[in-house]
Image (cartoon, rainbow, N blue to C red; front, side, top):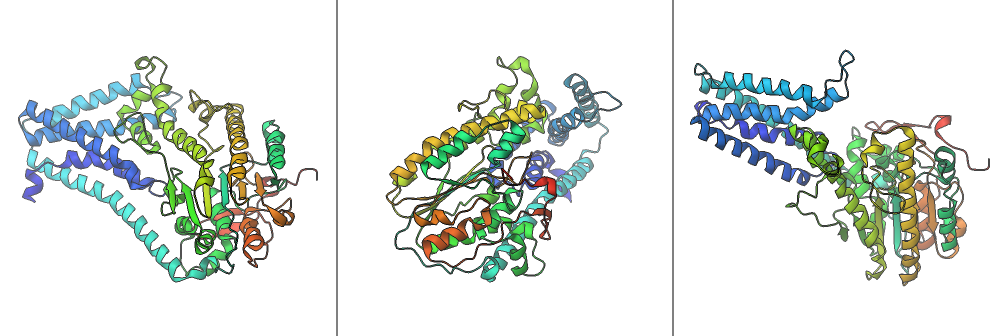
Length: 517
């Protein structure tokens, strides 16, 4: 107890806590490593602040008390600002710097006066703050520990029950074509683009067909969200069936990452001697980091011009949010610094598209999993490939503005694929198998998707207009690897409760009939 009274470490813990809390809240989406810079900078800020205050006040306990006050105000400012910015009080918008900054300065002044009072029992206050800081620090640690423990238990259960995602029944083909599974996140079907966006996508569809692709005009996703849709397509079955084979009490949501990363399709190809090639997506729960080749752009930790979305989110939760909004500080406006948070996304997608066309040169049979986060937001590309000066205008704009941002991204990825795909086909020593597929549609209509197949030989004759993702690899394994999977009914399902694995057929207005019907 005397240690807690004598040594004031609460500023250090309070500086680390906001980063840990944000990391714990987003642990399903990101890796721990994305928080390293934020942790280091917060720690350096706390140490420097304590050192400066010690030089001024000549008392470590008092310096620590003032430092904790400053840190609490600094790390809470952005959260309070963002909350008030979107929540008018009695018709007044209180989320403004000219209103909030004076309030915080008054709090800082009053708090400093209280902390500097000679009558203050500093050891007792230090004891209380140390204990509070420790409890704050423990909560996100326990939250993350629980997540990783549950994840490990689920992985062990799945490994102990290999039939959870079926068995390997196919035999390896003598001639092994490269297999490209290209996911265009949120890419809607052509008739939806025409009907809901006023955009004619026929030039892209016709371009694919001229290359030899079969485009399924009536295709719909089996599930309207990424994690469920891809878990189904990569395990060649409906999630309802996987739920039946999992051990009782298994949380389906917690199994998604393992179902996505260690899926049956990948196991099949690896058993046949294929190399797996995967790209970084920025979402840890969907990244195949243990693939034979995992490709990602270099990230310079020492450059502040390269900022991860997590870091931007953290900065916006602090008083540094002012840097994102005060136009006078930047010649080109506030978006100059705000757009730094989009650079990671731009760099990653550009890297993927540039590397995609080089993959035929890699020797040996390959299963390529390329999850392209286009036309999914943020909308950072213009139709001609230039980067958008202010992506936020699409996120915060009206429906018309949002749709324009979406169409821009559709046009951009169309152009890139029409230039990349002929090279992949021409440079492949064995004619490749290529699937280009939306995991789900846009927010306007989540079920109708782009679904196109380049299948050399007679396999193309097995395709049909309503084929859905759950049957994609069933057909491919049957056609090229001598498997005997039966095609399933092509049925769309809406998610009711992912934790329990409960699904239902979507409402009538959520699905779209085949064009021409």
